[in-house]
Length: 289
Image 1 (cartoon, rainbow, N blue to C red):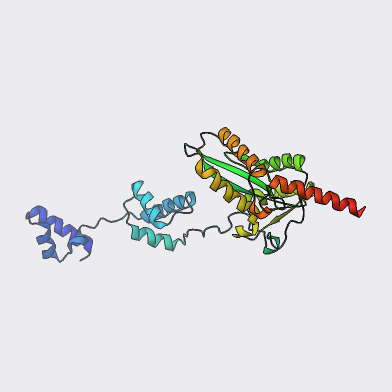
Image 2: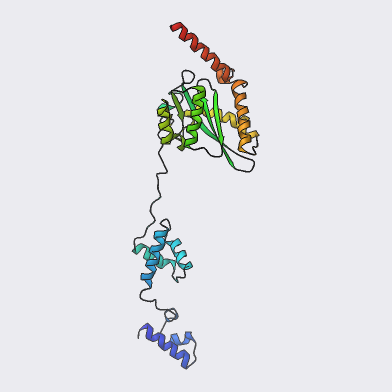
């Protein structure tokens, strides 16, 4: 006798003789789980697979467990094992994560500060970012530019955010004031390796060079400057606004250049050392004439 006919016999015994389901199943040889089984409509899996495909197309990063949870939330009475079986049968997979997260690092050890040192003022500049937060937790970015030979702090741009176009605008202002360097050194930050910045520097006759990936020591001059700014200023200040940060940082730059002795310059200030270097260069030029 088929399970469906046994199911009918159990129902007859329970109705006619008022026996329990357990007793009736024992009499006809039917397991209670089989007796309680509700037949699935013939098109159930077809409709289920269609629903799975719709979710997978809308959310390609979802796996079968998350798809199952969404199916149940939509009212499907299905367990996760069936969804897993159909998922594998339909060859549904989560695509691999993208490994390319933007442009790859383009720097090398050959562009480090010791492999390619500055030989005179306005020969090599270096630039980098330092970040701080305002009193209310909002970010403030500072773009610092340093002349590697004289250690002069050429200028700092302070803003909530600084993109490639802002970098170009800041350098354009510094070129007008200090002249154009031969090289400008940086890490592989996206603002520095942006094609917009690199093309503009090329048009200005300035070569952009990039240190090796994850090697900040190769850009040691601006890294040392950033460390001094953090230690002597940023760690001891609380900024209520970007405007306040600009004023305070501008004042500190003036002190750094004109009143703060620099150990790397024989305890001269960068401004004094720059003036001395310019005088030496002028005398050297006169002697060659």
